[in-house]
Length: 144
Length: 166
Image (tube, rainbow over all chains, first blue to last red; front, side, top):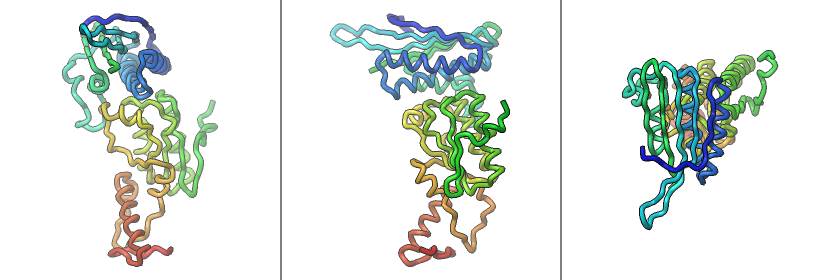
């Protein structure tokens, strides 16, 4: 993921299930300041909710950092604004990332981590996880 | 505080149909309380149908969607027909990207349409109604009833159907 200029940053600690609401509200607000419309704000907030829920339920708590990012355009091209979400925990980690990134729908009720959904919702998605160490997810959505 | 106090919160009966407002919070506790309250009320009052109004729900992720879908499944298991109304466009658009079964729910655009789907079905001479609890059949059966009603209104009854009294 190429580095982007950050103009705003919000940290939300995620320990209790009630912290998810704060993550969602913060995400909506930041997305609004990045210029996303109502639908875009909801989309980003939903992706944040998926990631935050994983951290709270399975990650033993952690943190999500929300950033208002900017990318300069090529010469003569306009730049763009977006939102970056960094979700991190120091929990048990994911043993099989490849399987976690596959849809579980075919097996019936969605029992997965919702990660394929986050990847589809956002424009850029990165995940790194090590069993016994923790999990890191970074996702970005750009406003066109 | 006892859950008994809040069993009827956000619910009212309209023409024999229980209309229940899903909470705007997607927190686990709030949705589970909604589930248990709804089941209690359905069990106690045996409405001919249930409408779950999700118009106050601004955001659904995969976990909260499953809890809502479960509310529908459980209510259907009690034997009541269930229709969801009021899904917000932004919520629906986002749900398409999530890993959820969007076919799990019977939906209607408005409360009015929902009530229409839950209209008492015309008795049929050849029909077997033991699958009444399956929400997937509710829309199908209602659509059949609409066809029969239209036929009856035009002066004909469909095969095996009683003509509806105008």
